[in-house]
Length: 118
Image (cartoon, rainbow, N blue to C red):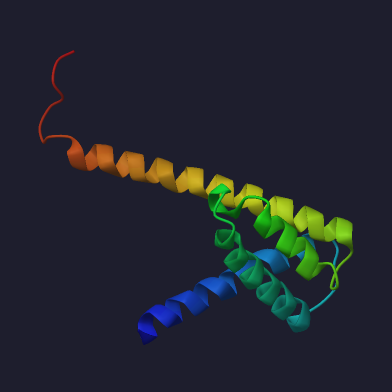
């Protein structure tokens, strides 16, 4: 149980770095406090996504929560860009990992030896 909790904590810290780097790339000044705020806001927003069951992957819910939670730390337009950019990066990541899975499955499922004639 402690190992799973440790991995979960590490993932939330990485998500916080993700939101922090997006904020910093948009010109938001801040150090450790900004990182903690981004981490907390992203964790709460990410956890709120599955609460609304009628939308896939919390689409819109996570962005709205992130906008609301980061709105007090950064300006609302910057929070909106962070939320939308984050969603787009997650989509790109999901597509990339699914491509890796397809390539790995093809390699595993291919019988050894030369390929069959067409």
